[in-house]
Image 1 (spheres, rainbow, N blue to C red):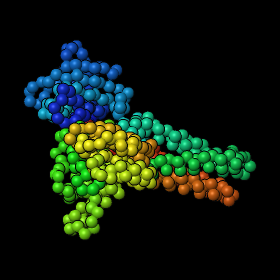
Image 2 (image 1 turned 90 degrees about the vertical axis):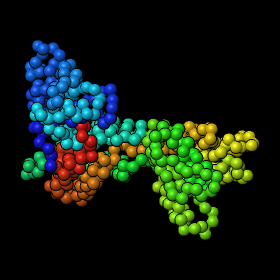
Image 3 (image 1 turned 60 degrees about the vertical axis):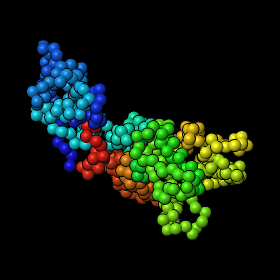
Image 4 (image 1 turned 180 degrees about the horizontal axis):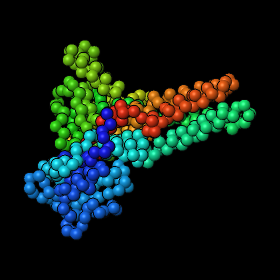
Length: 469
């Protein structure tokens, strides 16, 4: 159910928790009336209701506790705002109780608390944004990497909706020509030739197919990329896991791997969210890979879980003890097989214990010497992981995942309708059949860019937003 857009809505627009500044958003036809009831400008002669241009106004906000708080109000009194309604942003101290009291005061003077995503919903319904751009706003909020942020920014700027809107306009012109020809069929007037119609329909099919292929790579759950540490028991995986947590700014994570000289300490897998050079991902420490198949049942279960995590990984880091006698041969094998296996990086752990020169071990961009004790090589491993993930398909697509999930079916239907129109044209079928398929394609394209929508589609999109956006 779409909320009533004639209501005046208010919500806290900044994250919870203490901060130097907090902000409350206000939007609706009666915004100025609501604000006038509880806000007093610093200049006594200033009249809010006489304002007709955007302006910054300083003053005090009356709270329902008979106290006042200083705030600055950014005012958009006309329709030249984000929601195309009179809008205001109240900036004051970032204390959560203070912001809650300020919001309560606004609600006592005619506002109501906004639903999740209601500000962006109003912008969408007013034509300020289309549906793909609204989803891009959510993509920016939820971005977990520089790549996903750039993808959302491009989509917000019209990178997806603009070409589809232009295609829809082209098809509308084609449909107009076809229907005009049907109206004057007895007068033998040709508004568009069969060859030109076929050419434009073929180009339209190719374009829609390209967008479908692009969206397919994003039509997956919104999960963080997974980096899995694997290797033999006692290969230093858990120590490296802890070192990466410290290096990647996740020192507040309560998760820590148990470290022991005894092999097989890790029986389950541990995971924690980390930042790999501006890229958020999930780091996973797995149980050591056993060579002996006749291990006890709990060990067998741990091996199965390790195999599962490895299959789901976006980046696998093979951990080898650098002090092993056959380490040179193992590194040679890694370099030889790395192009045809799922290994992405090789971490030679415990390099602080090396008694021989590291140059005796073959050099390779994806082979890194690491010491969890001294921290040597940990940052380099972090950079290598980020580079690997940066090129993965999960991060390389050109639309936000919520758009992909919503639009794929409509675009496939549009593509199929255009294909049928082409087949009918090639078989010298009636132009009225071609026109019918064009109308179906236009309806499906309209659902993508938001010229055609239903309440359940809007509910599904904007329920994912937080309140205040």
